[in-house]
Length: 361
Ligand SMILES: [Zn+2]
Ligand SMILES: [Zn+2]
Image (cartoon, rainbow, N blue to C red; front, side, top):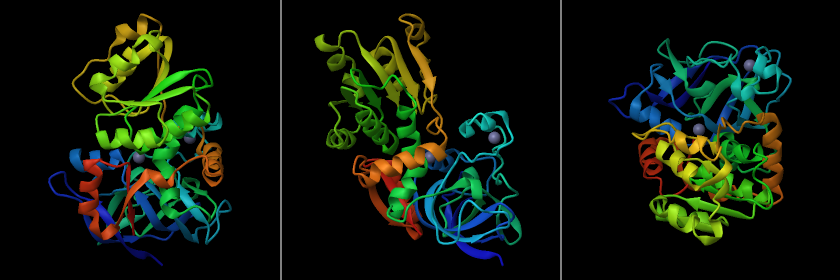
């Protein structure tokens, strides 16, 4: 029987997204119905609201967690009652990247707002509504592919499970997949939101000697210090303290978690010859990429998408580190707001004074 559910739908770039009652079809073969308990607001959601999306109308939200309420046919990986994290890199099992264990590069991932296993599950008065990233979790319920959920222990609070699904996988994974971040090295995190905070903690766990945090927001720099950054710097002043006498050779690595080309260039400027810049977000802004800096000094520019490592491998590591007290994931969530206050929540996320705003349906 289809489910009626409240969901945040973006219909036009000229109007804010609204909470609407929509209908979700039954989970088909290889699909599950999940009751969402928490969903984080990510920069990608905000950019959809600001710039629109060709797939509109679309249910927003891709970072979430909840409880499985129903399973379709041919589902054996999860059961009713399991707590699950939404996984944005489901293994299709068919393409050459998935066969090599690289589901984050999957070529079968639908780009049209549907699911890996079938058409979009959402509709309103019979008209289909796309779901963001195969999820659309700013909603009370979602129907998703079973490959798009990962079971996590009930000991995880829902708001922590939610932010694992995008911010933590992205930031933690970028560092965990970078052998350059190791004892005896010095590095910096550029951009200190939920992703940057995850990257910083991962770098600490991997034993890097120094991890600087660079962010224009004084509130976020204060947070970075509380998360154990070696030092915190405003980007306009970053070249100075970090190129001082003790760091005259530059940094061994930087993780660029700010979506600006200027941040990538700053990272390149701070790097020692042969240093590595791991770019998680970038490409926006009026600046040209400083390719001269890449060539001279043989610096390496490497992208990391959704944590690089397969979510099936990295999520258990994240969960173990959280449960053993090594990862402070509760502190990534700086505000929890009811789904019904979506407009206020988006404003709070845009103001970006804290780290992650989480919605509770
Ligand atoms: Zn995201
Ligand atoms: Zn694939």
